[in-house]
Image (tube, rainbow, N blue to C red; front, top):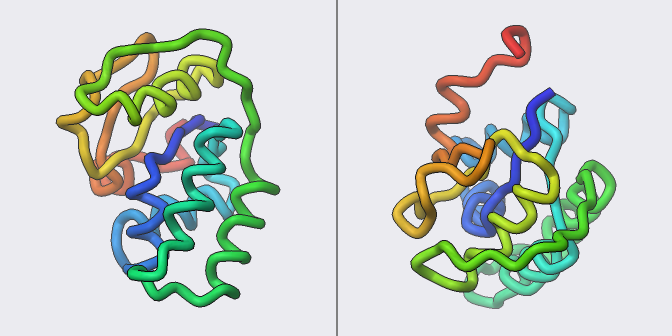
Length: 137
């Protein structure tokens, strides 16, 4: 099973556009095809961002999504600080990917990240949906 870290924009997109590629990635996490890697700082960011009023997500949707992430996630504790992203706030995703030995970091902002970090490849949700099949891994 592949391991993936999801940028916050993927989680938000999944909740706002339930038929889009980000939602398809989240479904793969929920059905066990992909092992979601998460750290405390990433989870805290998910929690803060999905609760922003301008997204107009219901409390039930937010709670269900966060509960699923909490239960399905492989929790890691990064031990090394990384400074590689054009937006320093994104470095936590590389730190998590490194600690979890993730195969992919999935983001809607690939330009903010290096193309790869160690053994982790940075990809879009569309790329992952189009190129990943549980049968081939």
